[in-house]
Length: 333
Image (cartoon, one colour):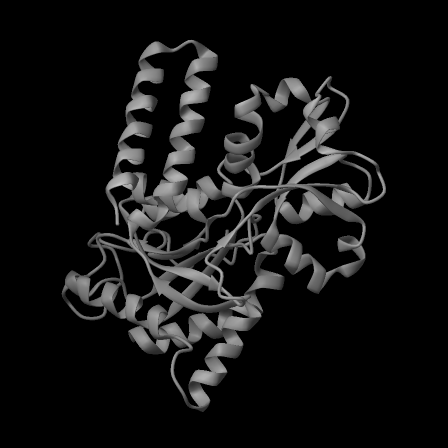
């Protein structure tokens, strides 16, 4: 997250069908080494262009000035589609939560260059389970299963909406949501919260960032829901770029985020207000290793799925991956 958590499909029309490395790309000059003439920046946004656009546009306008070329926003909530956009060269940079960032790194050759930091200085957030306030539902009730309740999960690739609840809550108890609940519906956190408040869902996944955002934007709905479970801390999302971008351009993008809103002066103060509107205080440096705690959760989920399917080869592969990640963590200072 962050999310401001997980997000939904609202396109700001993509200006270019394919941007990036091919000879058909628009370039600033005759050499492809200068990179694309225009950067398409994906934002995984639950609120879509109408709500998120005004919040992100000032930052992207500043980014365009800093890197010396236009930056076009692309808002969407479908994790897999956004990763595919980067893989195909339709986007060059993005804000992703942790699990889609891992997918972009593994399948699209992306690199993580920065991570978000919250207004309170936190660089982590928590997955939650929410119910309608006053419903009387407890965590024990939910985990008793019996196909009694209507459950709202997140996007299959959502870190806080699917991966973390499975790794920390359901897998350790041998619970498969499809068998546990009467109805399972996958959606973004904001829709799940609204449907819990309206009584359409009995229980749903959410996260601490979405809860704070909802409290600010729609306190009426926030007042109608309550948490019954919180996960351990999970890493914030961050900025990823295509790994094959021109190194000079990549460094300009990295420098922009790491210096944005920092230091004294009127301009830095203005930038801090832009960040505050996004619920951030700054961006900190990060590389792919920053995502290793979430990679462990992905491996744990793969191990649980392989065991459930009785796939011995997949069990062994997932176990080796999990052991590698844990060993890597143990030797780090």
